[in-house]
Image (cartoon, rainbow, N blue to C red):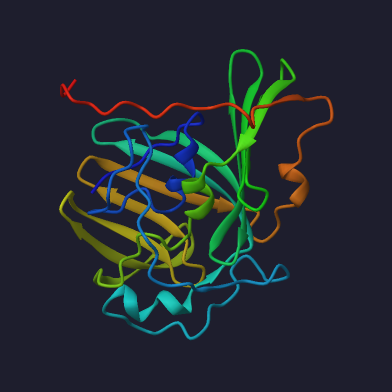
Length: 253
């Protein structure tokens, strides 16, 4: 079981969204991110006017596998997620924060901001508009370009990696949220994840190499304006930029 990391410069950072700890998933190129498996279900969403802990539909009192609960999740329409990672034997470290707008169970928009020595680096991925935007708040400069075909077609889903066959071990409260404790098994190892019974959001993930805690704010309250680019930012249009394919590693280096 692999603990994923948040890396602002990676296009695949969105894969961290609640699924960066799944075992037995296929690997993408080594960019520091985690893999995105194929979703098995398409659960519903919580209406915008819903409360942060809106009740899900027909939450069972007990369940044996993820297949018993996947259809009950009410995915929020938006949220801010902060990830804290604690590697074995080390102090907890905040890995990153993402602001997310959902379209059903799939991500519609994602924004990350990372403070630097000179201004903050902001990355926005707009899956509805099929564009990625990156800029620096100090230099007031950045660029934008279309998502490639794979990124546009494989939009991250909150429940990706929630294998219906994963066994549910019981229930536990994490940060005040009632969660299913799910056993994760696969070729890469074993671990556990804690998934909110009502909203389907992962709150915690454990693997032999460490633990991740996912905390959420602004559930169903994120404004679309968060994803607007300030008027004083000058974006270079990189639509015509040709990114060459990376050569295959034939020498094992």
